[in-house]
Image (cartoon, rainbow, N blue to C red):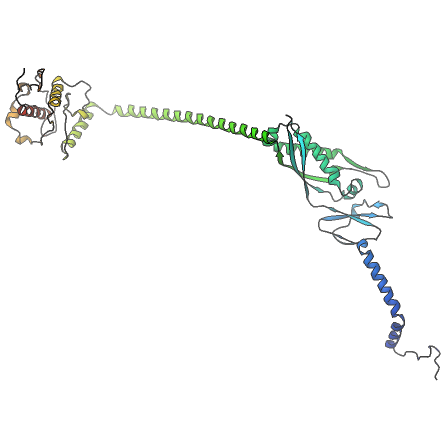
Length: 408
């Protein structure tokens, strides 16, 4: 057998590949064991060494062997992947806008118990998060914000009546609560004495956006009484508007009456008796030219116009009244015949004066003597026949057709 001085009876490898193969064959079991141990340690320590800060948050580092909370804002853990020692710890705080809703029991100034629902919106200051974490902790809402705002809410509501809280003073209550909360936050300080001493106002830690009163719950009887009162108030306001409307209407009528009076004054200055006569003559002409059946009653005034157009305020003559009574009692027609042209008028009708017309005896006793009717002066007319001629013709016709009766 051939002896090798540097080996265990095997020849030494002559190439690099052979050397690596020889090393792996000899140390592979120990390498596998080491990798398994390292993997187990990584799996166990991963949750304690890797911290993922979500969007909008910030991490406060707490060192177990390094003095506790790190108050330096520059050493805060930002968003994303962060490595820490397994014995240290990171606390996350949300820097985005936050809100919480809480209901508080309160008593109004008139002794009514009510429930107010409040919504508070706020945000944390980034640089003050380490101090807030050390002084108060992650549950700062339940420890600091909610109890303080509840106490101030009760204090403000106690200054108003139940009706004001329920209806008119809600915005004022919101503003007062916010103002008081900001003042109290300015008064409260976070202090720490030691190697890293500080004195920070709570107002520099929490940014308060607004406080909203979203609901007020009163007893049902109180709510019904307030609603009835409000209803009566608006009914009273309605009557006020009605009175105001009537006043405006009376003013309108007054202005309208003044306008009518001025119109009549202006128009009356341009209307004369001669103008009215002229308009009456025109209307009578149009009436006589109509083809419809008609009854024309000649007036007894000086103008000789029909009764519907007579502007004379004097009472009708006695002859005209007696003729009307006779016509009514005898129930004789008073309709005029067809218009006769002036050329075809009988001479007897034109020659006989009106004074010589015999009286018409009454139809029934007692006897009524009809006085003679004097023919009025013939006014200047535009008709083919004058008004006096028409009246004479009518009276002659009535006398000719009347039966002769003896007077008892």
